[in-house]
Length: 416
Image 1 (cartoon, rainbow, N blue to C red):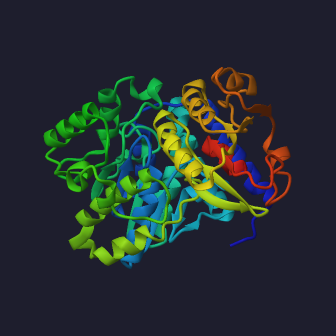
Image 2 (image 1 turned 90 degrees about the vertical axis):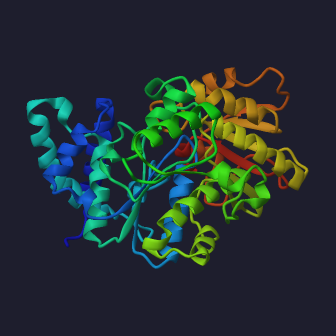
Image 3 (image 1 turned 135 degrees about the horizontal axis):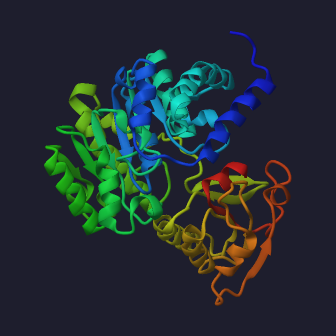
């Protein structure tokens, strides 16, 4: 394989990211057409399909770790990425290389152009390109099973051309309402679109209205349903433990455990493999503790209203542990997400530093400042990642004893 030229990779990523500006065309017919053109690689590798408002990335990483512990060669497809585009597609937790991305785009682009020649709306999107790469990579690298995270919703998501071993719906909350609906029942119906006839489904903890919708759809499709709440009850002490921190990760661990048990007999997944996998999950940016020049810093992607509730609990535990109100650095995409985030932060922070992630949908600092409750009496400043973190292991805010919390958009965490 020829050495990759940096300019070639830059051109390829510029092409891919430019596809995002074309807007979204919902439905899976376009993805089905692309998959047919490349020989249906999604049919070559069995998979677990994971949807949900929050927790789907963590549950996917847990399942990948469990399957790896059981001895299987695994593929993992998640989104978005933190730092490198190739993080979205991993085989045995090795990310897609820049050269592989270049090669896949070189292979896929003529097919995409041909599909879009008659109707530009049939030109595959950025996410469809990445999904095709994932399916191809898993088939070509000899994966024995893969874990596929839904991008948005479920019913109309590009990943929903798979027929999984088991479907998983982690949680239902109010996010992407403009696409999925403004009621729990509507959002749940979209997420439950991944349920396939006769294929088992695992349901995480969620509002009663969402649960009723998912149960109905599973029943209509003859899909056996297993519930986390029914299995583990309300006592958190009864839930599986994981190395990922936070009460909600115990809920996610229970969800992954149930999916693994369903896979159990055919895939030879033992309780020991489940326990080992849950204790060795690698999933950065989820209440992740790091050291900044000897100071504790926490990176946490809490980017929607449900996530803000989890953040509230975690910040309470953090204060009980450290006896100090943290210094919080935050940025978000859209006021609907930013409002509950800032309301939560204002209840716990000693000072708030507002930044703008390098994303078109990011809130400006003025928009963020307007959402901070008037009751907040701490310091509020405006900054940029480059000035707040001028060098590795250096943060310019707070004092020597302060705990730094970076929270909000996952894109912000990636920049940090």
